[in-house]
Image 1: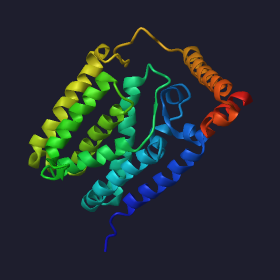
Image 2: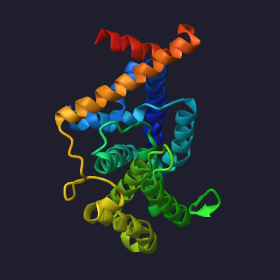
Image 3: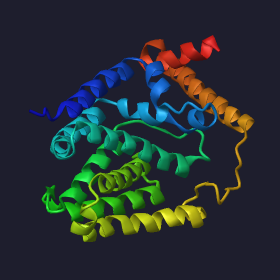
Length: 272
C-alpha cells in the first residue's frame, strides 16, 4: 500500500526545525536567506533553495506550514511523493529566480519563506481541479485574483511581501503540473489560460518594457550598473548604517535595550 503524505510531513518538520535555528541565531538566518548580492556576486546559489526553510518569525512559519498542510496532502495523493517533491523544489527555485530577475539591480534585496513553493502547490492543485473551493471562491477565480494581486504588488512595491516569489512559484507550479499531467491542457484549458495569460503579459513587460517596473534585465539596463566595488560599497554602507543605529540606541536606552540580533550584529562588526 502506498504511503501518502510522507513528503509533506518531512517538509513541515524540517522547515520548522531549520526556521527555529534561524530564530535563535541571526548568523544562521543570514547564511541561508535569499539575498541578491550573495547570489550574484558570491555565487551562493544554494540560497535559491535554502531560503524556503527559514522564516522571519513564528507567525510567518505557522501560516505557511498550515497552508502547506491543507493543500499538499491532496496533491501528494494525486501525484505521488516523488513528483510532489519535484514540483515543490521547482517552485522554490522558480519563485526565487523571478525575484532575482526583478531585483537584480538591488544588491541589498533579501527574502525568506516557503511561500513560493506553497503557491506552486496551490496553483498546481487549481489547474488539476479548477472546481475546488478556496476561501469560498472557485479555485480558478481565487487563482486569477491572486495573480492580479501579485502583479499589482510587484508593480506598486507598497508592502514588504515577496510578491515576486509568490508569482514565480505559482507559474512554476502550473507549468510543472501540466508537464506531469498533460491531459489537463485539454480538460482545463480555460482555467489554465485565465491564469497564464495575465502572467505571460506581465513577463513580456519585464522583458520588453522593464523600465515600467524599474527593474533590470538582460535586455534593458537601468542607469545603475553595479560593479563588484559598487556592491561592496552598498553592503558596507548598509552595515555601517545599522551599526550607527544600534550605537545610537545604546546611547539613548543603554546596552540592555539591545535585542539578541542587534548584539550579534555588533559582535560581527567588531570581528571585522
